[in-house]
Image (tube, rainbow, N blue to C red; front, side, top):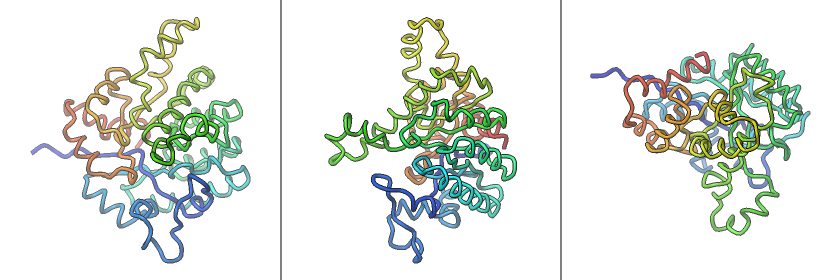
Length: 328
């Protein structure tokens, strides 16, 4: 019988109760409260659980390691002073979870991006002191895309530490919702999320990062996009062709994207889409993820067993690329 491949899943979420208590409006979530997790929806039982239930479901699906990250919008909509305090406390609690379950969990930091210098310092603290593997940033920070030069200290520090930043979706800006989505939100609320809004906002951020020049300034910077790159690999040829008309060279956008971006399979278990990603950006830049608990583990791992790749390439997606990128 063939040896089972180790499975590392990179975009696997949880909720820190203190951070989650800051969520308002469309982002509001049930509180775990003094009575524990009983009585709250199944999704939130799993988001708040960092022990027995999570490990049981990992084992049942054959997942060896989850890289834990806070669910959206994390701290990206919290003002600076509060965000700095919350980030440090939440990251310390996450570190305690990783230590309590050796070999099963790793972590991406939550960053107080409203204070970019403090966010850069927190990234360094969590990586250098706590052993975190990078950080996850969710959507806009109080209405600003992360490519704004005010946030570049975060990119500078990530490049210096040689760790990736995972750009994750969040609810679109209220102005975008008003113009693009309001007619359908009531009947189809996921238009703001996985069905469309998440993809549009995060893909736009990926394009803006290339246009901003941040990769010229920090050539070692590494960015992860989930959901098979938020559609950008599918459109890479056309995006590159379009920007070539602006005089920067025939392949400058493609070159930047394929050099600096990695993609994960989170919540996107499609053979044709995966094959296309590999054809566009290469097998070494595709990593396995589930998007737990927003997506159940078994569909992800059962799909991964069947993907039409060689054993060597399958091993890269399931663990090798993650171990190399995250230095695990």
